[in-house]
Figure 1 (cartoon, rainbow, N blue to C red):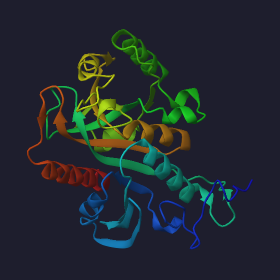
Figure 2: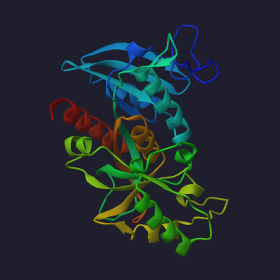
Figure 3: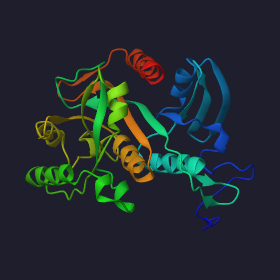
Figure 4: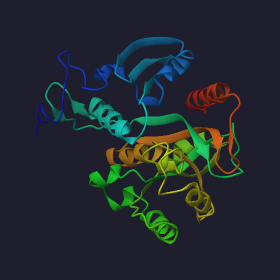
Length: 292
């Protein structure tokens, strides 16, 4: 079956629509960062850069480090952009853009987020690092996709729904997905681990109140921080992880979200040197990816 022009949009130069990338311009190991300015902060560690491509907020550098080919790409903020990036990366890997047909032999990408996050736990302090065991999405993105039961963590979803019913009158339909356990062991072994809550925005969706009043006030998130699933607590709050995990599971890729904790909502602290904290996380993730 050929994907029609309206569904698989290809630029005049043969590249995929939003990312402006050709299949040969991505590696099988891909780092996702939100901020376009963070892309060169990762690629400066490469021994060599082959490609630099930019379209809108999507900046991509592909190169090598100690003989291993790597790609780093900026996604911008939130799950709507993750939807674009994950689908277009998969298309580059698993659809022949010339014939518009799905490839018989599939490629499984390693997709590793190097991002920032706010902690919900005093025990996960500012300037520490966290590898997300699960992503719990409040943004609804994955509800637009068909999925197998094994691709989502239904028990986590139901337990969180029950919690939300007790604390708020707002209708919440979360989705929960697991990160790749091999990548967690390889890269996140010495980091905090837990369940990452992915919100649909930065202010009211995360309980922040400036002039508009939030339905989910910060008290809801403080109470939710005492909820746990087995040995794992709801550890942190951000805007991308659950969508990355959900789409990776559906598409057959391996994903891990590594978080630099810049804020602590339990103690009302913010990092005094966030740039340094992010740089340390970049170095840790690169080292573990290449040498572990």
